[in-house]
Length: 174
Image 1 (cartoon, one colour):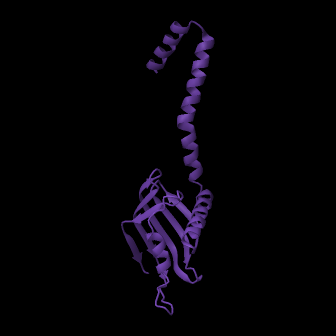
Image 2 (tube, rainbow, N blue to C red):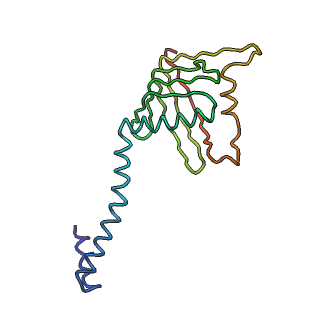
């Protein structure tokens, strides 16, 4: 508190007027609110489960479009800053056959780099998941088209694509 009093004294001696001091203090309060209140409000809003689920469904929709496959997520719960718990994850292949159904999926985030558009998950855990791999008449596995989409090198003309990598995938009772 002593430092603040010295700062006010300095302002009074320098500007010799209370109006200027009040303006400077108002500007200081606005700057402090911008620095602390806006991020705190965003954090509180993002802790709302409905908002998290809405954002996850939008992301799943984008992934579905990029993979030309159907991905749906019933609900999402973010725990702290690096763990995402997803419920009822369903991935269907291009023929709309179920490829993956996971009642519970937990992703642990290691790195999120917006400038490089990369996401690194240190672990992806699936509990009680059903994974259905099948081959068609020409001996192509149903997972092939999705794997091929992931293997594509990012197109320099398409700035929307992100690179996602997994360090470990854990299957429990799957």
